[in-house]
Image (cartoon, rainbow, N blue to C red; front, top):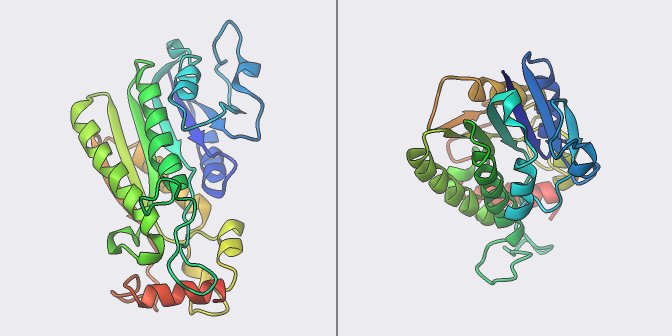
Length: 265
């Protein structure tokens, strides 16, 4: 029996690194999820996905119906367990062009960016609930940030949603014997997206790219966690401590000042 590994956000830096890492693992089949790919039904025969590595689109990943429809296409006779890697999300810097705190995309006026709720809470649980319906043990992982526990003002939407997500993961891990949840808190990852969204990070701050995480390092830690014998709710972190790191590195207003510098404000 094999392990089915599902990577949501497979075309991003971390998703792609996980695809590469798990492709070297024997006894695994990988299904990547991406809006850029062909629809999942394109690959199905007799209503089921083949036991082959592929990348497909299921439409709205936060839709319970879309996730359930996808999970019903998994032929569980091939597999002994499912590993789910949630590598999608947005990590907004909540500053306007003048450097003031500003939350965008807040249609319900709760002070939280709706995109973060949709991608880092709703989509995660829509998929894990659907996969539980397959009837196999599920091991689900999501990424957090090492700054989250310091609750920086410029990332309020992010850490607020992640706290909510972790609280629910803990409760569900206690209630469901076949499901384990993992949170991997990481520092900055050296990839194009980070440099596009933080254009002046290496010009206006003392940040050093040699201390940032490389995507393949993150993928190795993901593999170590999901293939471990740890069950229930597990939280871990991956972080290279730079020589300029101090205990108040993520504390406001110091952290907010750094973010303004990174954005060129």
